[in-house]
Image (cartoon, rainbow over all chains, first blue to last red; front, side, top):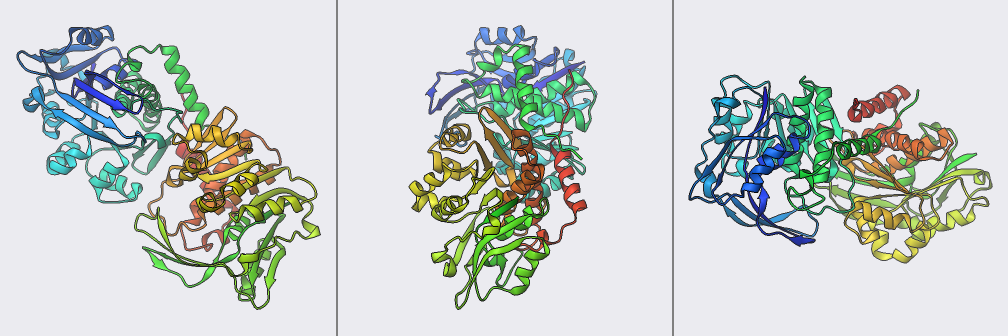
Length: 306
Length: 306
């Protein structure tokens, strides 16, 4: 049994009000698999890089127990590269450079050793490639979680909806939920999106936390109020990876476990934004993670007497 | 012992995407005192109206057990009138008319029978009038809660800061917290504002809930996800009134009681927005309030095992 993560493994160059980086390792699959590895020991990546990718970064996946047989290395080609600059409020950013490189014709090859996939994380990618991944798994995974973004709604809405139809959990942010549904009210948006296929919808609201919708149930998860957000890159992928990693750990798909999975995902994401790129989420102790989760408990608990 | 609410009692004309009203009763003290009356039976108003104010609306205060000895009625003058139109997202609005009328030279007279005030709600008004109210109480109340808005930060910041220095709890929204502190991060903003005098700060985030800050403690309260917000007018005043009403009921000022007070205030506010003006919060049963509070419990509770 395993948790397969498909998504980008890439180089990012990030500029925030606090500083800037050279090319550092990034990508949805990188953040998500690292986050998932804190909860589950059979995480495997499907992704593609060029021969410019650093051997140490591949070694680091292995150090986290992450399988890399599905990580294709294209000789003579270059890795996907994104450069962006965050504005002072850290809530918006400009994309400075997008070089697709190896991603342009990415064919997600699933190694035989991945056919034991029980949990599938479809990180942000073209909806077509996400769908192909599902089709190439001989057995339908127990839980498919899909992350996506407004970019695919702008240019490939029909394709996106075909993929959304196949998944169990969709994670998007509030403006994406509005765009996908055509509804301003998030409750109405959620109702419409839940009719598109997914049984669960997670609406990520950044510093305002997250909402989980399922049938008539709603769960509102807080975000940890942070004095400083150093670099928001990858926070959503880290959240999704922590979420599915925790679900794989507990092994039973239900609303209560998903509530906890959102708290664990949020805890990991709150670490992610404390340093540039993946730096912080590469070296967490289980004590740090537990202590952070307890902060979430304290943050949102109250007891109403009779 | 009593809970004194000072603020506007006024006429509003409201237009939303769902419809529009003629002049209906509104004002911060109206919403706050009605909300407080669900939890505490010795609520008393300090406010001013003209002789155009409806006798039935005054009778309705009395029906809710709200004392009106401090409600001045100015013969030959007109009540404060505000007209506004909400945009489609219901998060922003245009003020169409503001007629100060009796409010222009409002002198907050405190009847002797109000000198037993233990809980003081300073509804949104000029900071000078709010301060005068505190000064005219012979004994400093056990708990002073102050609501204010960006308008006073724009035109009377020094005056506002003098009043803020005197209160226990300040309730403002997120953009006001940023404006008052000059900090974008709400954690940094809260730290600065807590140094200005208040021991507790509540940051209202509308559909994203509320944050309570006190020393190093933070509580994040959810908002009830609503399919439709019919009319947001008075929601913040209702929240504040429910908050202080619940505090008066429990009688002990501490962080845990304030967490619950925020939930009860949020529950009342979630009713407020379901109909125009005060319509919904005039006729709630205690069963409805309890059921709504239980919705908040269900919405945000989770149990992390070991």
